[in-house]
Image (tube, rainbow, N blue to C red; front, side):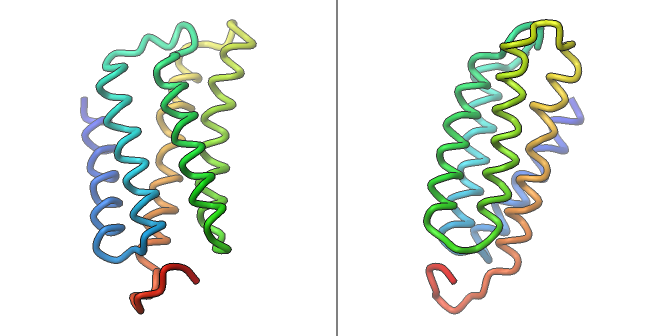
Length: 137
């Protein structure tokens, strides 16, 4: 599917910039996004979105914890943004769990497209990181 190819292209660009220009926190966030995406693709290759996608929900929870740990290690703004976006993804699963009448398409779209703002924030953070050897500013 071309949407998956576009997503993985943006993801790999983000990971590449984070590795080349980012600090440890940017690299950690990019690797979290990469691992979560690959795990989602492997564990739920063809989600139906009729009910809560448990595998994706668990992966999103683990990614939320990872982003939260990154946010706790810095005073910079960007980890709080990605943690917030990831929290929205988790709340999407919780809403589907509480309200079964939520249609599959909106649930799927929220779950899939919430990743783009996260990747763009990581890309921005990695691209704007000073390369002075500082661990964190």
